[in-house]
Structure formats: structure tokens, C-alpha cells
Image 1: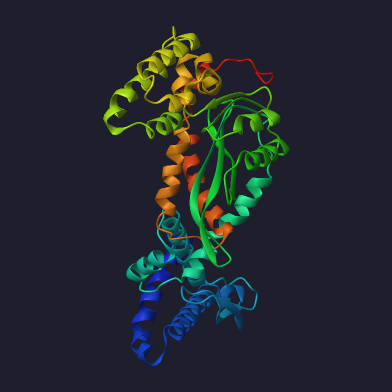
Image 2 (image 1 turned 45 degrees about the vertical axis):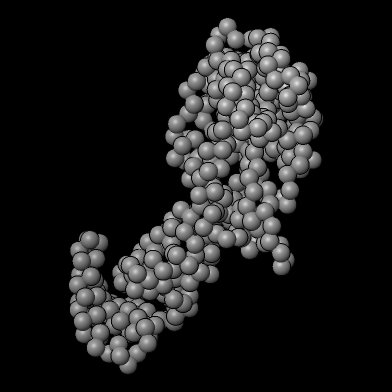
Length: 400
């Protein structure tokens, strides 16, 4: 008999069995009732099987015990009927297993989308009449722990056109105290212009020394050459990055710089100052040069001389050098490398999910959830939509 026909028959038997046994629910708890229903249905299924296979001289051969997971418990013991030649396989258990997998997948999806474990349990209660415990949801999320650990150990490509580095802060519990800790994220643009996550780590603070440790990890995982490293304005980051990738150019985030400068400008001057500052970094024409950018800086300094001299020290030629690296690259890619905005887009997705969690009890729980979010983002964005403009990338690497 075809599997579809058998499924239809078993479904009818389930309906009939439920109708007959439902009246006894008032004398049984939910788990006992579940066992009675499933065992009765499998006996009916074996009876039907024996009728259809009478020619094979098969016969009933008692039952064997198996542990069965319900939504509420992970260990319900159930008697599964068998036949003498061992060919009888109750489809009822297959259908129950499929349903369980669907519930698990739904639970994990809701959790990945940012719902708390309490919310997930509540939704399942509403839709399925039973809840799944918070611990069970967390256990499902742990399935990604093994995937993440395998990902951490796999070899990476030897060459990346660009590496974007950023850190965001999320509340984490250590011992009895809670504090915001730095979640380090590095992703790279591959030679085929797709993007992939390269590193995900958590540390109590952000520092150039810690970044150096993580860049060492990338070296050990096979990353030999990077053309450009894009990061925010963290002090000494550039020096640390050069230790590991001496041939790489450094581009510090222009948006971070402008934000930091404007935070020190009076409200009445901010709009005019912002326009002058914007003009300095508006270098997206083929004729734009670093020399012109430096001339714009001098003009701004003259315009605001005597008012914000200390703040303007941030725009000295020495300090500004790594903020103008993008001008050395083709016009087509400049807007994609002069800020860490692409990492910020990812960070927004991470914050959207993690904001529903007041805090994380363990470092592994935090990393597992963030890893799930990033892999979703990678599948639906980075791998799906290569950055076509990177085809204009200059081919000056030994891996070209």
C-alpha cells in the first residue's frame, strides 16, 4: 500500500480513536491519556497490517518499550507493538515524530526572530493547547552550539578583499553581576564578491589588544591576505591590525568620526559645521583626490578658528590619514568602504533580536543566538546578493 494511503488510514484511525477515548480524559492526566491513545492506535494499525499481510504468515509478537517525548515531558514510556518477522513499522509514531519536529522548528524560528522563551511557550500554548518549557526552547537553541563550534574550527579562505570589524554591547551575566560586554564581529568580502562571517566573539571590553588576539585567530584559520580593513576609530587599532596584516590598507569609519566631532559642537553651530564636515569627505567623483580633501580641512579650520580648536585637532593630517584611504580606491566601491555602515546594518538585526532578552545568563547562550541571527542574515542577504560593484576592485593582490 502506498505511504499516502496508509497516512490517510492512520489519520482516520486517529480521529476515531480520539472520539472513542476522549470520554476517558476526565479520569486520566494528559500524559496518561496521550499514552493510551497512541498505544491503542498502534494496536489498530498492527491489526490492519496483519490483515493485509496474511499471506506472509506474519503474526503479532507482543510489544517493546520506548521512551517518547511529549511537549511537556522528555520521557514518557510507551509500548510499541511489533510483528514476528519485524516488518511492521507503526506509521502513527512517524506522524507524531513529524509533528514534534514541526513544533521544534517553529519554537526555534520564533526564538531566532527575537521572542523570549516565555513568549515562545505562550504562543505554542495558544496554538497547540500545550506549552513547551523555557528550558526546552533553550535546549533547542543549543543545536546551534555544535554548528557554531564546527564553524569556528573550519578553515577560511586565504584571501579577502575587505574585512569589516566592529563591536556592539549586550548585557551578559557573569556570576551574580550583570554588565554590557563587547560582541566582536568580523565579516569579509570574498573574491567572488559575496560576504561571510569570519569571527564572532564576546569579551568584557573592547580594546586594540583583544582585536589583535582575534586577528591572530583568523591567521590561524587560514586568512593570509586582506587588501583593506575597515573599522571604527578605536585608538591603536590600526597599529594592531598592521602587525597581523602589514600589507593591508586601513580605513577608519568616517561616520564615527563625524559623529564624535559634532557631539562637541554647540547646537546653534551644528548644522553649519556638519555641512562643512560633509564636504570634506564628499570624495566620490573620479577627479576627487586626497590633496583636495586636505585643502577642504584647512578651509574648515579657518572658518572655525578660535571656536573649536581642540576639537579640530582630530582633523590634523596625521590623525585624518586613515579616514581618507577610500579615495585611493575606484569610485564604484568608495561608498561601500568609507564607513562600517554595512556592519551597522547587521548590528541592527542583532539588536532587534537581543533587545527582547533583558540579559543573557551565559556567554554561550549569547553567542549561539547571535550566531543564528548572523547566519540567517548571511543566507538571506550576503550569499544571496553579491556586491556587484566590487568587480571594480583593483587586482593588486598575490591571490588575483
